[in-house]
View 1 (cartoon, rainbow, N blue to C red):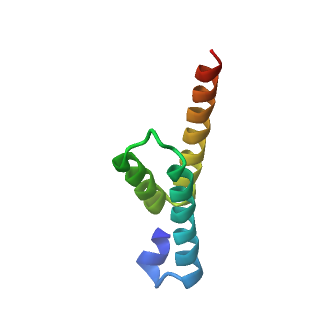
View 2 (view 1 turned 135 degrees about the horizontal axis):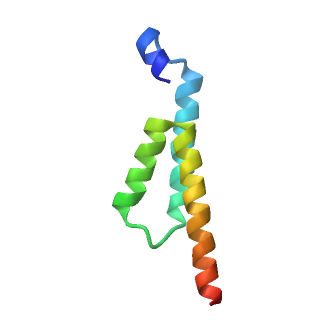
Length: 75
């Protein structure tokens, strides 16, 4: 989205897509009871600033975290 900020106004559809990504991030993080509010806010801000790469990093981090938690529960 940075080129849009530098060259011309951002189209409304991109604002909606960004809001959707932040909302999906919040939904994902809401189900993690061990995380404190500051860490949840940090992830949402990362998604806000980095857009799709930030959201993908969040999904990978949550998948690894959930897999470790499941393996610890079995052991």
